[in-house]
Each structure stands twice: as structure tokens, then as C-alpha cells.
Length: 333
Image (cartoon, rainbow, N blue to C red; front, side, top):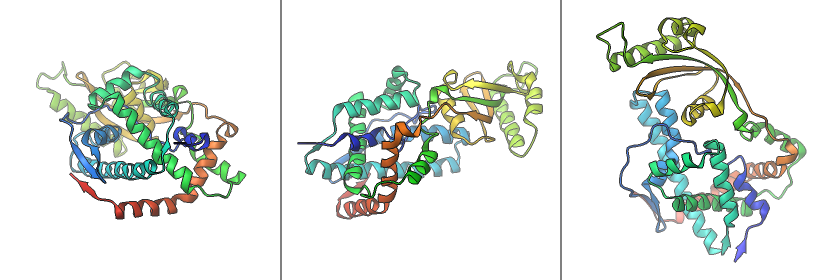
């Protein structure tokens, strides 16, 4: 049996791995079923739901009413994830045919990296996420292994043999260094308006009318209204008198789903209104992001070398996937 070398497996811990973040708004739970079959290998509904979770959370914050735009963007993302999982299954078939293996320590290292990066190192939160998605740790371990197989096959067979130049390494590093930063050191400045679900000054107020108020305020802000003035007039929290401004807030002090949304959206984006608890609705605008430190290029040069080679080999790799799919028996459920 073959063991892929360390450089190949290094891709498993590179910045090219998509981030799996905590789900703030989970999909309705359902009994697991089959999403697709590729050459007899099954992709389950729960696997797709687990990977779709962070996207669902982000879209729900952008589209609180979850209307047609939300559904269209979610459906597009779901199909993209499903095709990615199908591609993995086709590659795994090729991987098994050559008798290769992924070391168990590489799989555990990648899972730890995901927990550190997406759950602030809190394994309990990660386990809770798995439970909410109706996935066992054993199955997630296998999913991670499948992902690393895909990365390893690409590295093994489609790397450009030409070594990356120093200029290419620097360019790739500058492109990805923010993703490689120490996220636990991130800080953020933002403005927030809090509209409670009840209003003691208006006996006719209901959670729905309060939500409508929050939506109207968010629309005004998006159309150019002064955030601070609206916060002083309408917000009901300790920061209202300061125009809702909060500075140097540590990423680790925020709920994981909130930090994911705030650090994902561009500076200046208006998020919400979102309801994080039964108490009320929040409208948030990020005004500045202060990133944690990034590693020096010297420490990540192997990953950058791999990334440069991946970029050069993308066309050939995509043709390879097209050939696999053209010969495969794929059935969407």
C-alpha cells in the first residue's frame, strides 16, 4: 500500500481548504437520505446540509425574510456543493485503484485545524454542530478523509513540474495571507442597533411590528441614512448614546455565528435585522476589521509552493474531472 508523502499531505492543511463555520440558522432536520449516487458511491442529504450550513447562515443574515433571492442563492450553492461531493467520490474511486492511503494523523490534524479556525478551538461546539446536522464524528472523519484524498490526488498528478519563482510565491502569499492569520487575535469595530421584540411605550407593538420597524430602519441605513442618529433614537441597548458604536471587540468575545457573519461581509455592509435571541432584532454595520497576525512567508512557503502549482494545474485538473464525469454513472435524487 502506498503512503502519500508529507509534501502531498501538506495540502490538507493549506489555506485552500474551504472553511466550515458554525451554523447560526440550521436547516430543518429530516431523516437522512440519498442526495446523489456516483458510480455506486452515495452522497447523503445530511452531508450536503452540513457543508451548506455556513452558507445558509450567511444568506439568512443578508435576507432575513428568506424570500426568492435567498432561495435562489441557496439552491445554487447547494448544487455546487453536491457536485463537489460527487467529484470527490469519483476521485476516491481512482485513489483506491492505485492502493494509496491517507495517514490518520493527517485527517486528525485537519479536523483540529477546522475546530481551531471555525469554533475558536471549542470541540464541544463542533460536536454540537455535528449533532444538529445528524452526522456522527465517524462520518465526519470519513468526509475529511475524502476531502484530503481529492487534494492529494490533485497534488500527486497535476502539479506543475516547474518550481514556483520567488515572485510567484510572494504573489500567492499576499493573496492568501489574511486567510492564514491567527483568527483568535482578530478585532472588529462595528455599529449596532437593537430593537426589542416588545415596546413598553407602545401597547400595540408586537414582535412582528417591531421586526417591521427594524427592517424599515435597515432599509433607511442602506439608502444612506445616518446610522448613529438612528441608533440614538431607536436602539435599546447600552451603546445607543454612542450611536451604537463598539470598538476593538475581540472575535473570541462574539458568538461564533455572529463573528463569522461580521468577518465575512465587507466593511460598510449592513447586516440584518437578525434575531439572535427572543429578546429583539439587531442591525449591524462593520466599520473596521483589525486582523490577527499572519505567519511569515518563510513558515508557509511549502503551502504557497503547492498553491502556485495548483493554480498552474487547474485547467488540466478540471479536464480530468470532466473525463471522470463523462464516464461515470451519476444519478441525482
